[in-house]
Image (cartoon, rainbow, N blue to C red; front, top):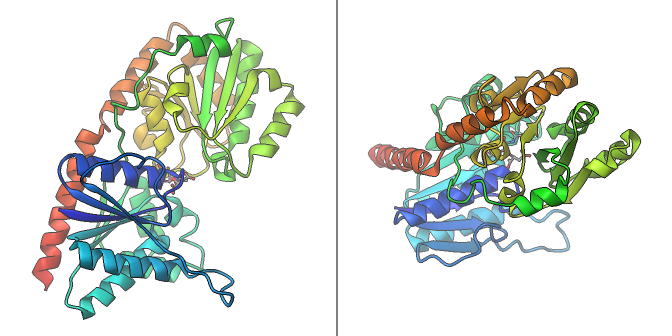
Length: 378
Ligand code: GMT
């Protein structure tokens, strides 16, 4: 198949999933055309089946905001037409699904039928999409897609609950490449951070309010009162300054390190003993899956689709959002030397269920089904 993939090319989970999916499809012989405003960060190598088309956003003094959606729709029209694509797969409803709808209508006037699959990733539904400024367009463009997928059962339910959706939504969970995400031998790194055998807690996120990084720091503060421990925080975002100040207030600066944005997050995960994801909202929790693949148990909230990934009492523990005391108790339980090896083993076993080799065929089958039913409608 010839597939066009539209996504946000930055560090967000949706962009990572879209890029890894495209790379995976190219590896099994499909031709994949990425259409974005910037080269996706993980697409930094040559492959005969991978193409990248940059959306050219022209500005003009009259525009206070350049009309990205129009430039994107125009680029989709030309890529579908000249590269003879079979399907467009857009990741994140806003504005990709509505731009795809526009491109589809333009192509129709030229006698070209292009099926569109929209994948919902979370914030496009649970946060931004519900906002009255976007809701009518989100509802319309989901209903107009030829196929719709969501990354968890919870996100599927949320979408039906908050939008008037007439389409069937298929759940295809996020996935992981276990060849890249695996525990590596990084003992020297562990020794540098934890010279006295301290337990190492890790959190990675984009430091938005919804990630509740404050809970990570407060849980760590409580844990460290009981056992020697260190905390590594990977990523950057709006909450970073406030979190640095909180560490100063609590006097934990010597045991907490802010590493900023890192590409090779698997190197940090390779030395971790516990991963924390206390999010307020999380449709799936790709960062937690990356941790599990590196044999790191989870301490998470019960938000959104996280409990579909983190098996309570097996791969870690699931807590009510914001319950610091409970999270502290469970963190100490997992970190106990008598329990830690079992949790690590279980985390890896669970991650294996989400290996790309298992999930990718679901997308391929879904594309084939969508193309077949779109052709039948002509
Ligand atoms: O979590 C974020 O802030 C980024 C966001 C995105 O849109 O890239 O991630 C969402 O999509 C990921 C990939 O499907 C999911 O693993 C995340 O759980 C989801 N984030 C939220 O729902 C908050």
